[in-house]
Image 1 (spheres, rainbow, N blue to C red):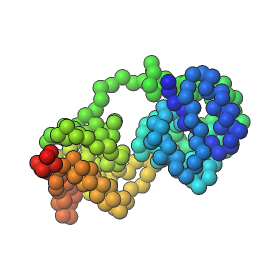
Image 2 (image 1 turned 60 degrees about the horizontal axis):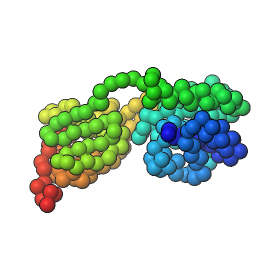
Image 3 (image 1 turned 90 degrees about the horizontal axis):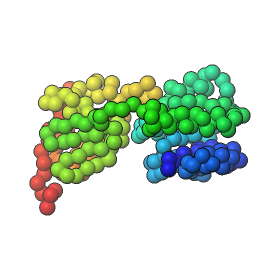
Length: 235
Protein backbone atom coordinates (compact mmCIF):
# COMPACT_ATOMS: atom_id res chain seq x y z
CA UNK A 1 0.00 0.00 0.00
CA UNK A 2 1.45 3.37 -1.02
CA UNK A 3 1.70 6.14 1.55
CA UNK A 4 0.73 9.80 1.11
CA UNK A 5 2.02 12.42 3.57
CA UNK A 6 -0.19 15.53 3.93
CA UNK A 7 1.53 18.65 5.27
CA UNK A 8 -1.37 21.09 5.68
CA UNK A 9 -2.04 23.26 8.75
CA UNK A 10 -5.75 23.74 7.97
CA UNK A 11 -7.02 20.74 9.91
CA UNK A 12 -10.36 20.60 8.11
CA UNK A 13 -8.78 20.54 4.65
CA UNK A 14 -6.21 17.94 5.78
CA UNK A 15 -8.91 15.66 7.18
CA UNK A 16 -11.09 16.00 4.07
CA UNK A 17 -8.12 15.16 1.86
CA UNK A 18 -7.26 12.21 4.06
CA UNK A 19 -10.78 10.74 4.02
CA UNK A 20 -11.04 11.18 0.25
CA UNK A 21 -7.63 9.65 -0.59
CA UNK A 22 -8.13 6.70 1.79
CA UNK A 23 -11.17 5.65 -0.28
CA UNK A 24 -8.79 4.87 -3.15
CA UNK A 25 -6.77 2.42 -1.09
CA UNK A 26 -3.85 4.61 -0.01
CA UNK A 27 -2.35 4.94 3.45
CA UNK A 28 -2.50 8.60 4.48
CA UNK A 29 -0.51 10.35 7.21
CA UNK A 30 -1.40 13.90 8.29
CA UNK A 31 1.36 16.03 9.81
CA UNK A 32 0.64 17.71 13.15
CA UNK A 33 4.21 18.71 14.05
CA UNK A 34 5.19 21.46 11.62
CA UNK A 35 8.63 22.01 13.14
CA UNK A 36 9.86 18.50 12.30
CA UNK A 37 8.44 17.79 8.87
CA UNK A 38 11.68 16.38 7.49
CA UNK A 39 12.09 14.02 10.44
CA UNK A 40 8.57 12.69 9.89
CA UNK A 41 9.24 12.35 6.17
CA UNK A 42 12.39 10.31 6.85
CA UNK A 43 10.60 8.17 9.41
CA UNK A 44 7.51 7.43 7.30
CA UNK A 45 9.21 7.30 3.86
CA UNK A 46 6.02 8.31 1.98
CA UNK A 47 5.59 7.69 -1.73
CA UNK A 48 4.17 11.21 -2.32
CA UNK A 49 3.82 14.45 -0.36
CA UNK A 50 0.97 16.98 -0.49
CA UNK A 51 2.50 20.20 0.79
CA UNK A 52 0.97 23.59 1.63
CA UNK A 53 2.96 26.80 1.14
CA UNK A 54 1.79 28.73 4.21
CA UNK A 55 2.88 26.74 7.23
CA UNK A 56 3.91 27.55 10.83
CA UNK A 57 7.63 28.06 11.51
CA UNK A 58 8.91 27.38 7.96
CA UNK A 59 7.05 27.64 4.67
CA UNK A 60 6.46 24.83 2.21
CA UNK A 61 9.29 25.96 -0.06
CA UNK A 62 11.75 25.37 2.77
CA UNK A 63 10.42 21.88 3.50
CA UNK A 64 10.39 20.98 -0.18
CA UNK A 65 14.09 21.84 -0.40
CA UNK A 66 14.80 19.72 2.69
CA UNK A 67 12.91 16.76 1.22
CA UNK A 68 14.69 17.14 -2.11
CA UNK A 69 18.06 16.89 -0.36
CA UNK A 70 17.11 13.34 0.62
CA UNK A 71 14.54 12.05 -1.85
CA UNK A 72 13.11 12.36 -5.35
CA UNK A 73 9.59 11.27 -4.33
CA UNK A 74 6.79 13.35 -5.94
CA UNK A 75 5.86 16.57 -4.12
CA UNK A 76 2.60 18.35 -5.01
CA UNK A 77 1.93 21.81 -3.58
CA UNK A 78 -1.63 22.67 -2.52
CA UNK A 79 -2.02 26.36 -1.80
CA UNK A 80 -4.39 29.32 -1.75
CA UNK A 81 -1.64 31.34 -3.42
CA UNK A 82 -2.64 31.47 -7.07
CA UNK A 83 0.03 33.84 -8.38
CA UNK A 84 2.32 32.87 -11.21
CA UNK A 85 5.42 33.61 -9.12
CA UNK A 86 4.19 31.32 -6.32
CA UNK A 87 3.93 28.44 -8.78
CA UNK A 88 7.34 29.25 -10.23
CA UNK A 89 8.82 29.32 -6.72
CA UNK A 90 7.32 25.91 -5.97
CA UNK A 91 8.75 24.33 -9.10
CA UNK A 92 12.15 25.95 -8.63
CA UNK A 93 12.28 24.63 -5.08
CA UNK A 94 11.77 21.06 -6.25
CA UNK A 95 8.00 20.54 -6.54
CA UNK A 96 6.50 18.34 -9.25
CA UNK A 97 3.10 20.03 -9.43
CA UNK A 98 1.01 22.87 -7.99
CA UNK A 99 -2.73 22.88 -7.21
CA UNK A 100 -4.52 26.06 -6.14
CA UNK A 101 -7.27 26.24 -3.51
CA UNK A 102 -10.19 25.83 -3.64
CA UNK A 103 -9.63 22.61 -5.54
CA UNK A 104 -11.68 19.71 -6.82
CA UNK A 105 -10.84 16.58 -4.85
CA UNK A 106 -11.19 14.48 -7.99
CA UNK A 107 -8.48 16.52 -9.71
CA UNK A 108 -6.21 16.19 -6.67
CA UNK A 109 -6.69 12.42 -6.72
CA UNK A 110 -6.06 12.24 -10.47
CA UNK A 111 -2.80 14.18 -10.08
CA UNK A 112 -1.72 11.97 -7.18
CA UNK A 113 -2.30 8.81 -9.20
CA UNK A 114 -0.60 10.31 -12.26
CA UNK A 115 2.55 11.25 -10.35
CA UNK A 116 2.66 7.88 -8.59
CA UNK A 117 2.46 6.11 -11.95
CA UNK A 118 5.25 8.27 -13.34
CA UNK A 119 7.45 7.70 -10.31
CA UNK A 120 6.78 4.04 -9.56
CA UNK A 121 4.27 2.53 -12.00
CA UNK A 122 3.96 1.76 -15.69
CA UNK A 123 5.25 5.19 -16.73
CA UNK A 124 8.32 5.07 -14.51
CA UNK A 125 11.60 5.07 -16.38
CA UNK A 126 13.22 1.66 -16.41
CA UNK A 127 16.95 1.76 -15.79
CA UNK A 128 19.61 -0.22 -14.05
CA UNK A 129 20.68 1.09 -10.67
CA UNK A 130 23.77 3.29 -10.76
CA UNK A 131 26.62 1.88 -8.65
CA UNK A 132 30.14 3.29 -8.29
CA UNK A 133 32.92 0.85 -7.38
CA UNK A 134 36.43 1.92 -6.37
CA UNK A 135 39.08 0.57 -4.01
CA UNK A 136 36.61 -1.84 -2.40
CA UNK A 137 34.01 0.89 -1.92
CA UNK A 138 30.52 0.60 -3.43
CA UNK A 139 28.48 3.78 -3.64
CA UNK A 140 24.74 3.52 -4.33
CA UNK A 141 23.80 7.17 -5.01
CA UNK A 142 20.13 6.40 -5.65
CA UNK A 143 19.84 4.61 -2.30
CA UNK A 144 22.16 7.11 -0.56
CA UNK A 145 24.27 4.22 0.78
CA UNK A 146 28.00 3.54 0.97
CA UNK A 147 29.23 -0.06 1.37
CA UNK A 148 32.65 -1.40 2.38
CA UNK A 149 33.82 -4.71 3.82
CA UNK A 150 30.25 -6.02 4.38
CA UNK A 151 29.32 -2.84 6.24
CA UNK A 152 27.18 0.09 5.10
CA UNK A 153 26.29 3.63 6.14
CA UNK A 154 23.48 5.93 5.08
CA UNK A 155 24.38 9.21 3.40
CA UNK A 156 22.77 12.56 2.79
CA UNK A 157 22.44 13.68 -0.82
CA UNK A 158 25.39 16.08 -0.49
CA UNK A 159 27.59 13.44 1.16
CA UNK A 160 26.81 11.05 -1.69
CA UNK A 161 27.63 13.77 -4.23
CA UNK A 162 31.03 14.40 -2.64
CA UNK A 163 31.92 10.70 -2.53
CA UNK A 164 30.75 10.25 -6.13
CA UNK A 165 33.08 13.07 -7.22
CA UNK A 166 36.00 11.55 -5.28
CA UNK A 167 35.43 8.13 -6.86
CA UNK A 168 34.92 9.57 -10.33
CA UNK A 169 38.21 11.50 -10.19
CA UNK A 170 40.31 8.87 -8.37
CA UNK A 171 43.31 8.78 -8.27
CA UNK A 172 43.22 12.44 -9.31
CA UNK A 173 42.38 15.25 -6.89
CA UNK A 174 38.83 16.56 -6.72
CA UNK A 175 39.25 20.32 -6.49
CA UNK A 176 37.21 22.39 -4.07
CA UNK A 177 35.81 24.28 -7.04
CA UNK A 178 34.60 21.04 -8.64
CA UNK A 179 33.01 19.90 -5.39
CA UNK A 180 31.27 23.23 -4.88
CA UNK A 181 29.90 23.03 -8.41
CA UNK A 182 28.71 19.46 -7.77
CA UNK A 183 26.86 20.48 -4.60
CA UNK A 184 25.38 23.67 -6.02
CA UNK A 185 22.10 22.88 -7.76
CA UNK A 186 19.35 25.15 -9.07
CA UNK A 187 17.72 25.46 -5.66
CA UNK A 188 20.59 25.73 -3.21
CA UNK A 189 23.66 27.96 -3.19
CA UNK A 190 26.60 26.24 -1.53
CA UNK A 191 29.38 28.25 0.08
CA UNK A 192 32.82 27.25 1.38
CA UNK A 193 31.53 26.70 4.91
CA UNK A 194 28.82 24.31 3.68
CA UNK A 195 31.46 22.34 1.80
CA UNK A 196 33.68 22.18 4.90
CA UNK A 197 30.79 20.88 7.02
CA UNK A 198 29.96 18.18 4.49
CA UNK A 199 33.61 17.16 4.10
CA UNK A 200 33.74 16.63 7.88
CA UNK A 201 30.60 14.50 7.69
CA UNK A 202 32.06 12.42 4.85
CA UNK A 203 35.21 11.77 6.91
CA UNK A 204 32.96 10.54 9.75
CA UNK A 205 31.09 8.18 7.42
CA UNK A 206 34.39 6.70 6.23
CA UNK A 207 35.47 6.21 9.85
CA UNK A 208 32.16 4.46 10.59
CA UNK A 209 33.18 1.92 7.92
CA UNK A 210 36.58 1.40 9.51
CA UNK A 211 38.41 3.53 6.94
CA UNK A 212 41.11 5.78 8.37
CA UNK A 213 42.43 8.81 6.49
CA UNK A 214 40.22 7.89 3.52
CA UNK A 215 39.87 11.54 2.56
CA UNK A 216 43.29 13.01 1.84
CA UNK A 217 43.52 16.79 1.92
CA UNK A 218 45.68 18.21 -0.86
CA UNK A 219 46.43 21.64 0.53
CA UNK A 220 45.41 24.53 -1.68
CA UNK A 221 43.72 22.26 -4.22
CA UNK A 222 41.11 19.88 -2.83
CA UNK A 223 40.68 16.27 -1.76
CA UNK A 224 41.64 12.79 -2.95
CA UNK A 225 40.23 9.38 -2.11
CA UNK A 226 42.78 7.31 -0.19
CA UNK A 227 41.33 4.08 1.17
CA UNK A 228 43.19 2.39 4.03
CA UNK A 229 41.21 -0.22 5.96
CA UNK A 230 41.67 -0.32 9.71
CA UNK A 231 41.91 -4.08 10.40
CA UNK A 232 41.11 -3.57 14.06
CA UNK A 233 37.58 -2.54 13.06
CA UNK A 234 36.76 -6.15 12.10
CA UNK A 235 37.59 -7.55 15.52
